[in-house]
Image (cartoon, rainbow over all chains, first blue to last red; front, side, top):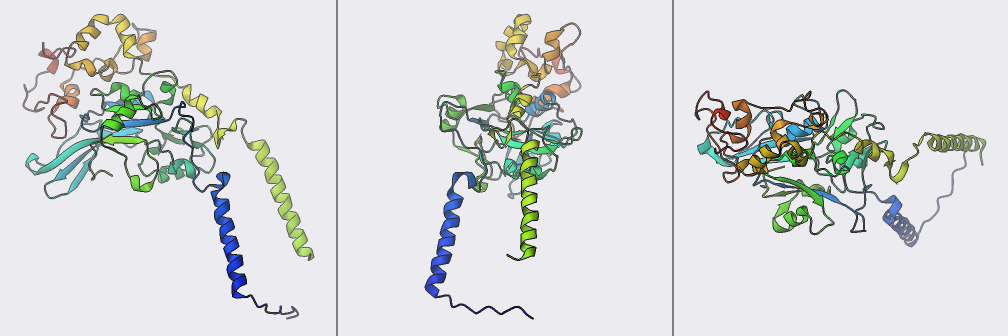
Length: 258
Length: 147
């Protein structure tokens, strides 16, 4: 064919191992370097005086009135249709046979109709859900334009004037906390009422909660209400196996909740 | 180096160069101010209007009702939980009235019997049988339910 066949070189076994070892070692070393870290996430500030927000929900106190869901919709102009929520309340019912039933009519706003007869209920409880404001959020990592991000306070926020509405983050969130706003065409989600925090007010959902089941606070401040709540109770996060660094702590959460 | 490789390198170089120029001009000003996002977005988000005002603002005018509520079982409830957001009412109290829920349906949002509701947190009634057809507020004062 005109092309000279190259001479087959003899690579010794020792050479092969040395070279592939060097390449593998180099790749591992480079991946450890800070700017090239595989997990693109906000770093918890080393300075413990800086705020690092977390949320706490006491399931034992939740009465399932969904005042939080109602207030959130009013405060943040969330569309009234029953599939757009920044936060919502689910009722879990575990029957004597071990079946798990989850209902959330219009996010709890329409009230709950128990279909399981009381004699057949093993256990039932409410679980309010909202953005977990994860420290290693899957949603912010997948954003192709840098519109979803995590602020230095540890809040997962959306830059709505920069979002292209691709919906990748909606799929990436394992907790289902994002939606595409039907009028704006961009992603909308819980901001922990960032605009209220900056004005010195509590988030709307926490302010209206009649039993004080919801709380937020600075995880760096060991005297904050939230830090004490986590310390005094046996708190867990949702889907810990996903290593999202969720910062929404539930007290008395049953293992059936997912 | 063969000619075709030289040409390919030239095309590659042109592409990379133009990308660098484009990125320089298309990146918004405050991008990378704090991280891989527009720093100004934080200001934009925090500029939203807060619609739920604080309970202190309610008590400035309605101090007697607030005192009654604070002495009763409903003391842990914020005024705006039932009466709705008050940001417009504060600006012009005459024109913008707060919600005044009167219906039975409103009370049973919290007080209907449900095995999932913690007994010690809230008094519950059978929403169907309890004084059928009556409106709750004929017997109960919502600010002091046991009087």
